[in-house]
Image (tube, rainbow, N blue to C red):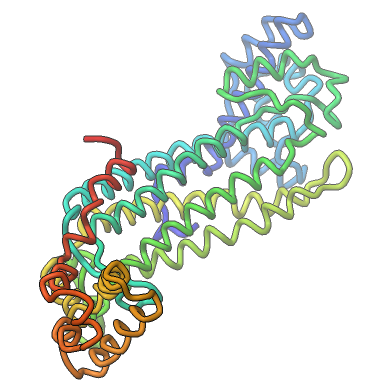
Length: 432
């Protein structure tokens, strides 16, 4: 992933230095377990920890000759450890190192993503509570529907990201497995205790059964979870983009002093961050199909999954990490315009109360069909700029003959639509 859309905390997880450090720890912990079992001398395990080291450049140099990354690493490691290095990697196969390392990296990445979700959730809750009673129009199909509050809008997105957090915790748990089972996963040349020991040291669980590789459905579930989070990012970003449109202008991204919106038009204030987030979400979701296709491997293993994982593993996690933190920043500094919300709510002269009038007429004795026709014929006149909705209803003989003017006027109280806000907030955020 390019630096423009990367945070150093996440990119470090995927850098060679971290990968080889994890490889070293896997091999060293395995040596400890082998020494406990009496398979190798305890002094050999001690030597690995004391003298074990590696250089990324040297590993790359060796790999250019061997065309095998794990062998290159082991060769470089042996240059530091000395004669005792012959006991390293006893009974193990390359996938034991590679797959266990990937599990560690994905759990490290998940922890950063969880932190990013926490920051975003905190921002959403703060702004939702701030605008809990800021009335605005709700829209369906992009058309004015009924009043809601801006706080409820944000609370809805909070709930979605709360669900995403639970999903990511589950996905992290599912992918956090260790395989040290040897060729074709039979433990023929290595005791299962080694796997259990390494897993415990690395904060993983032993894979119940590995066929030389950890089953890739675990990884597919992990990246599918990232895709869901990315879709929620795009959903919120799209809402902000719509609200920032000139004709709406109910909320907009913070526009910093000195910021420029267009090279040609100095007046422009564009939703560049949320547009960027929409694009980044697409990039994260692009990992899903390859991850699903990686589930199918030949017999006990092949490496068709390897190359694609080396691409989308870093890219998807780095991109989503950046996106979550960028979105959190957008919400933290979002500029909100309650006066524009009130203006837009009043734009259709009370049409947003049509359902309440409909229900009032049914309560007054008209059939639902008669009520609907009466309300709609007056509403259509408002759409055609032929009058005020309340005034038209009062002048309608069928409506006026069914319901008192004062009862009609009561149908136009915005508070009617927001009376359950506290109960909804309690459901989303808990009692406060």
